[in-house]
Length: 536
View 1: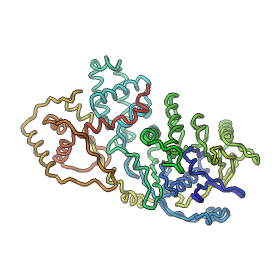
View 2 (view 1 turned 180 degrees about the vertical axis):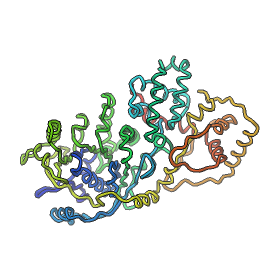
View 3 (view 1 turned 135 degrees about the vertical axis):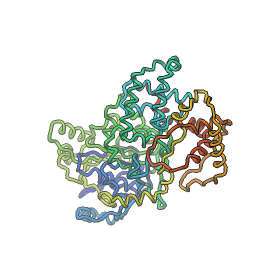
View 4 (view 1 turned 45 degrees about the horizontal axis):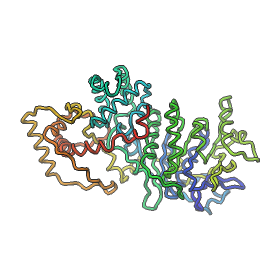
């Protein structure tokens, strides 16, 4: 809970342990075995950040974090701790928090989508578990797409680009090096698995704007963004890569702010071990660099896992605020994990840290936070402060109601399939954007009718919650061939929740926006490659 301009994490008979907001961007760790109270700690911290006006992102692996959106209710244990530690005098009160639900599959929250151009070849290679040779081919595919203004939005775009590069490898090998057909075929097979895991819904548009995560409500409370991950947990590669994409995109796009009185945004990584499993040393170095530097942009990162041993040492050393719940010590491996956990704390002369870790009860934890000089405090054994919101999951009807009330629903709910590499290649547009096509009279009539409808259609105002649309740069004129390329784009793959439109409307919209889309893609594609895409 947020009290006295500090975040109260836990209490014991003699101490109250507070996290200082100005040091909350020095990152943190919440560790402990399953069922020991990590979720309670996570909710308590998320509530406190929200109370002080800091937006939060976290993943809900079991569905029970959704209770943040519902007013809490008293239990005997909560009542005891509130009375024992005088929490009522510190304005403890049962309340609900402003929550935005998200879901990569669009089932239990607003759909989360990312374009493949934004994801970039290196992070995509992580999802697909590609070898170095296969990643090299994927890098070439993205380079060719960039050079020829062929946006890779979704999986059908990527398939089309891979086939195009292989079919024209004699043209590209002199510039980019050998293109192994075997590697290309392996990538194509891997994409089938990605489709089965929901890739057709995830890699699409409208793409997520991370600025929509960094918001406060009308009362000044930070919005708590909850990514429903119950289904996503079955696709750990997509889950971990999406979180890494978020982290690196925030790092690239947020301005330097230096030391602040409180964080600008706090990011909780649940099941943190998934981020680092099978990670190459070079990739790990990039993540370590981001973790080290992103605090200067006002972002606090909190990793949640069963043991500190799940986190690479270089990253663990940067996590200044730590909460350790119980760890079991039944096997030699467990005993080693307990020892590692104990060694991450500044010792308390009143007890043996390793012994206490194995004896902690549910809701108890060892806590060490940075003092006002940035020095880790002596570890304390405390009862974690109870959350003020509901402990447990909300029902589906309440979730649906909150999703329908979201001011972002109109922006993200319906999927959009813009003209991209698949359509452009299908219409034989070469690298110079030239189109050779014979047009039947009836096709011309359809095009002219579509354009006329577009010109007569009233201009719709953008929803209030969306940022103003900036005027696109002046585009070169485009002719009938370009319009035909759009109209003849081929059958579109159905994915996610699509808006139902007539064929004439679709053709009109595409004809009128083709030139703007091309330049917009050129400006925005490859966001990730500034950091990850150039890795070899």
